Image 1 (cartoon, rainbow, N blue to C red):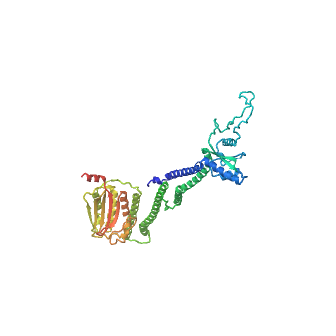
Image 2 (image 1 turned 60 degrees about the vertical axis):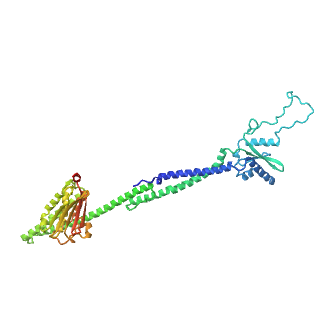
Image 3 (image 1 turned 135 degrees about the horizontal axis):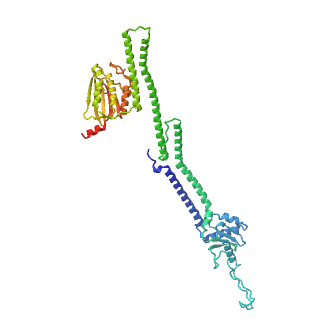
Length: 518
């Protein structure tokens, strides 16, 4: 199973989504802040021009409506102007578009300016008098007021304001009714933050909500959808449906989990099918065993009951023939039971193999010696051919001989009188291939896939021989023995006619080394 691609990883997607959302949020907030601060600080008019424009608008409004309420008119009419200013009338009315944005002591400075412009604080010239002035240090001389009284808070030591202010007079009918004061410097950052903070906060929250929604839709929703599908597949698997599979699209950790789940589902499905097939084979085996055992048992029971009947007169030759049949069926029953036990040990792994290097010549010689009487009566010829350089076989000598004996017995059983059986061995790579071919009628093609099944017989299609059929377990034992040795067995029809069995068994290592250093 391949690992997720890094750029498709769910963790990287979350990280990229978070970074991208944060970058977009900061960029949008910055652009909005620049736009708002440009409106706040970067007005196209200078403070002098702004003061003149506001004074002109107020003068025109007062000219038309002398009873206008400046406290309502100024904030409403000049709300789009972010530069704070102060309108102070002669009657003491004070109005500002943004009172919180005015510098400290702005009101006192404008009051001082208004009083200074109106002449209230200007020095008055002395009235002419015929009397001579007393000396300055003469006792009883009244103290003259200072031409410029001390400035209020907001002025420096030299009587200059601490910050420059631009003024414009509000004039109606050539009469000054007040002044418009605009600070020459932009408002402090705290004012901008106080003014722009709510807008930026609401905009940021909205953008954060949009970004979170997009991240959830683009990053988490596909993964959540596939996780839901995986959960449904897991529920279905828990209910016994081993054919369900999860989606493997995406290339992230969810995909890796889905692949693991699918592999587990495939394994469970395979095991379930194997269990079903094993159960079917077990049932079939029980049926076959019952059928195969019932035949000799029925014969034995019938003849024994006949022999035990006192009212049925039997002559001695008939009694001996019945006893001979009972003995034959008993041996047949014993052979079937022995083959079944042998096959169960081989397929169940309960039989331990004594692995050694086995010479093919010894196997062929023992087969010829074992079946010599069966070959003599029907006049069947047994040919043995071992190719030069054929190595030894790695395996259990007794079991290999048993497999070869069963194949040879099957070939003798289906070879007519005057026929031939050929045993051939040769080396093919790391295996030794043993071929057993006869000159019988061969195996019908439709029966070839099942010749190694238990109790499967094709004697009906291979008629014409005088040797009785076996138990139907010989070739099953052959396959079990060869597969226990790590080899394979194959049944086919030879091109020249007759049946052909190929037994492939691993060659012994000692034999291969001997061949290499020869």
